[in-house]
Length: 309
Length: 79
Image 1: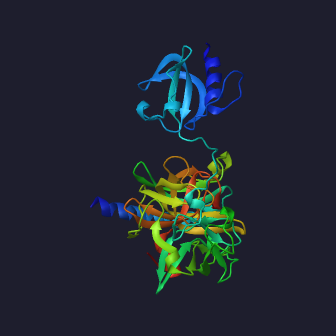
Image 2: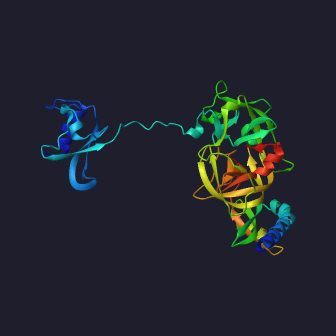
Image 3: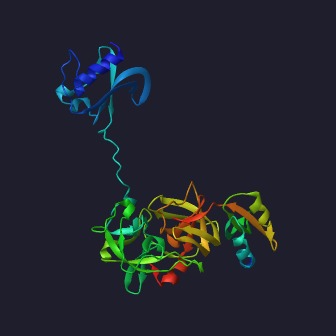
């Protein structure tokens, strides 16, 4: 018998595909039948075999009598491979885009009128624990008003005003067109302190804050590109940054170049940049096709009178 | 000692950058000015939108003896 014919017999027998002269004996463990090179003791051989894909490959003694798959079908060898269960690749959103409570640094967040940005970290202002991110993430580029709803996840990631409001816009540093800015930062006050955690997703706790030096290695956890590593290539940059509402001048910024590919992309705004010891060093807010720009964490802390938690 | 020397070095580069920054930022095609290190020495970095002969001509090779490095960054945008 040709391998192709043997395959059709198996298909009919185990999977119930109709074929004249074959009565099917559905095998619940078989999830697929195909043709391929036979693998013996883990090594591929030159023989073509009928591949029988099973949910679980069992020891022959454990297989029920009626469900044993023969070693060969009229001269064509069979090869049983464990495949698990086949399923369509449902687009399960990554955790970064999902609703998570307690919410933590790295996750999608945003003012109800924007798309989505990243929750940076928690900060303490007096007795209050607040969420830190960018003005353009939490305050919609100066257009937000105190008390505006903040969604986690952000609207672009399915956040809704009736069930995903985690906090209210509390304070922000205005970005000014006529002046030189040093930070793009804002605070949101959570409704319930138990809805937020001081962790940074896939990184851990923040140890403290410090100023980084040139050529130091840094990392961040952000909504779009998740955890990435980079190198600080400038710690006193002055630059012009384009926003939806215009372009603004920023001074005393740090510039990071990605280790492999981009350090960040749209949606990563607001992410905390950390050194390899776990200290917060910057607040990510902008980028060019090759670089990422961040406010220095000390400037952020003093502009908002907060301490990183 | 080399540490202190280095600090002095960076501080003066910072001053040189400050003196020329406003003018550089007005040069068409320049999107940023900063300080970096190249071959262990501090340099003034001028970030440009696109690499064009025009911008190369407009940006000097050095400012008060501090070498200038042109970096093609593309435009900076809020993310």
